Length: 550
Image 1 (cartoon, rainbow, N blue to C red):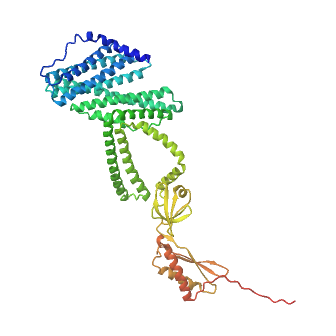
Image 2 (image 1 turned 90 degrees about the horizontal axis):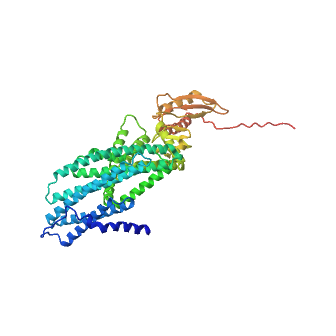
Image 3 (image 1 turned 120 degrees about the horizontal axis):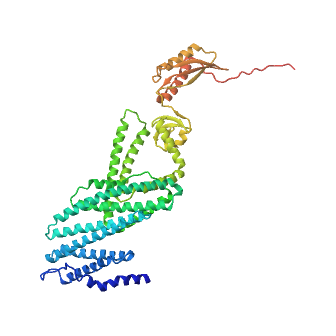
């Protein structure tokens, strides 16, 4: 409370001397008797001008917080005055002589304020070379932002003069050249500051758990300075665009700063500090730049929509390319390339869209890196399936449509992903098996080869003719339409058992014809053996009973 009273007294005392300060003002505003602006409006404008002049006169007398308060008063009163001038111009009922004098005085006031900021920046620059350079450079950047706002007001003032019929070609040419030089300087400033920030981030990352408060503070200060310099560059680009200048290269630099994708992963302390700083910046942007934020959200949504369409188009192109490729990609590899291409395009679109909202991608990606490590520990089994899926993708032990025996399951592969494989069994059951179960077990791809041997065994009795049985078996095999001619079928006497003689019959067939050949030949053998009188023995035992005398 005591401090507030002191501030009020300090600000009030110079008001007693204000008449003397402005008694010799060389350029008072005069109005014609026929001015269409009312006496009340002119009185309000004069009062605002007087208050601004009084505050300007006091700027040189104060330092620290008192000067900040006076600067705030000047800024507030100037905004009120300019709003009233703009309202008069929009009404188009003003007195031209009165308005011309008023706007010209605003132009002179703008030049004086610019000189004031130049003087402050010069004094701040003289303090460089000490241990507090970072804070000094940050303060200089803030003053440069104040100058940017002043230049915006100057351009608006020149447009007012054009509106009332004045020729300001020379003034606009001078302002254009000044802004071009200024934008070129800020182009270098933001690039240099970005490099310094990168070095500071690398130092903090290398420090790991031993990162110091000074390192964290430097990262935060450089981020804030980069944000301010980027804002100054953006303002200069906006003014140069209004003046009809080509700003393509400047916009490229500005985009590279806000949309540059880095791979820095910070220590958790540094990352949390940067995230907090980003959240504060986002909050300020939402409060102070509401309409601009709405427009950026529209652009954000538009970029996401276009990225989605582009992703679908790329997926279609890649799908057609890999499916018609002569490299004979597996179904899983085709799906992988197709999915990856579409998601990659959409991800790039998301990153570009986020950069349009002013979100710096470096800290965001750093947070994703830290979150990725945590998620990796939580999803070890899933990642194991993913790794096994990558091995299956690379080595291709089977593909969609193959008949396999793996992980204790036999069936045909109906779908594959990097996490699991779906198998439809021969009795039409659908089984979803994790890839790590399959890759960790023996994989038998039954349909990998174009031919499969059908192994069968047939028995005859000891009393039957071996030549006759062999001829019957050979005729049956050779007559079957699905038996391959090459390799030639194998029919051999195999085992002399206790009560039977075994023949092995081994024809070759296509994998899909395996069971048809097996079942058809087995049926035909039984029928031909019966017709030819060849017996098929079954286990039997002779029991001999001997009579013994007592």
